[in-house]
Image 1 (cartoon, rainbow, N blue to C red):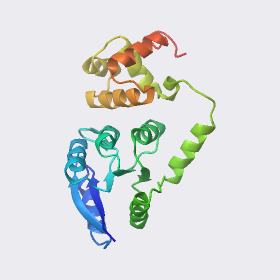
Image 2 (cartoon, helix red, strand yellow):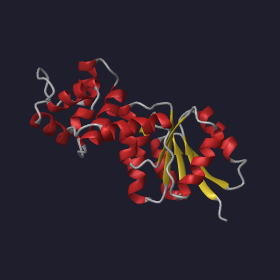
Image 3 (tube, helix red, strand yellow):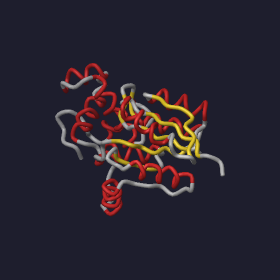
Image 4 (tube, rainbow, N blue to C red):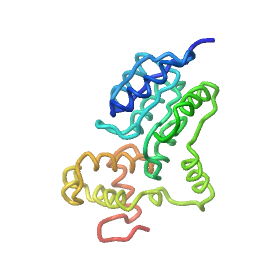
Length: 216
């Protein structure tokens, strides 16, 4: 039986090296590369075409969500397993919608990660129970508009987009870092299913999501 070709991407060196040290002992797994950024993840996927990629959710150059969305476009057979510390709505749903195959927390046991890898190549997704519960609750909820999925902070950022503010201007307005603004904008585009900030601004104006007005 062919070995499962696995790549590991995490910007925390200790976490990445720890995963690699464990995975390398598994006879059925072949490590084909490692990286510490979303850009590295995309380059690894293009060059090595792994069967499975273990990927962190938040990295210095962007999010695993952005990298996942890009990778599944040109390598749809790669099963991306998100391994993260986060399971809040603004991270979980965009990751799944972007194409992540499985979603685990960093508290998962090493053997659970191995099992998730093996299941991925058998087309069996694995979702952390806390995350699965959130997904079920979402499906049971009544129909909602896309912007109902935004957090309060994302609504504030969307209002600023509606007014045509730049990332730096939003940063100054809301007293948050530019990197944080970029993350919020990425999440907003994903949740609203729009291509760019211009379309997000049009959405905000169409639905009256503007500064000084309440969310409808």
